[in-house]
Image (cartoon, rainbow, N blue to C red; front, side):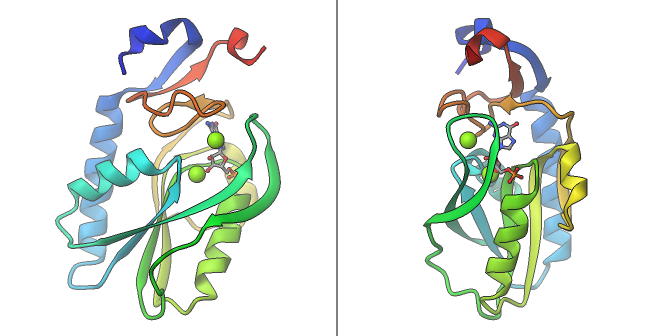
Length: 183
Ligand code: 5GP
Ligand code: MG
Ligand code: MG
């Protein structure tokens, strides 16, 4: 998708495709080093983490496995409901596995703290988190995120997997929407 196709909907480009790629190079190198010689399962959280999972996994030299989970915490709007529901569970058995949860964004942190507790209860050897984006409110919850791409302002963003009403996920960059889109 080209920026010009939806340029009227966008207020601002926050992170370019190049910035995202460079950051993923760094995170992939860290994961390769941290898990050298160890088993590693990447758990992507659908649907938002599809882009970061695909781009991160392709940068790894480590022979990882990938699995997916779908949870819901946001509806079609922009506010967290605080309610987490499993829509699709993992196929993999986590007992004894090293897990890295791959997420698009941490806002309130409610989804992730719930998810970490849920996955820890399944007997894995370790659970860590890699998140492409993090907003300021994430500091209020006790979630330890080992790999963070970018700390961004407290604005609703779209692109690179992130949607507004299921749109804009395929933008290769991260941006904010113009006010007219919401109304
Ligand atoms: P949290 O539970 O940390 O508040 O956020 C959970 C989920 O809400 C994220 O994984 C993401 O799907 C969605 N979300 C949070 N902030 C944003 C945002 O700025 N833009 C979009 N498109 N989704 C967001
Ligand atoms: Mg997400
Ligand atoms: Mg969404």
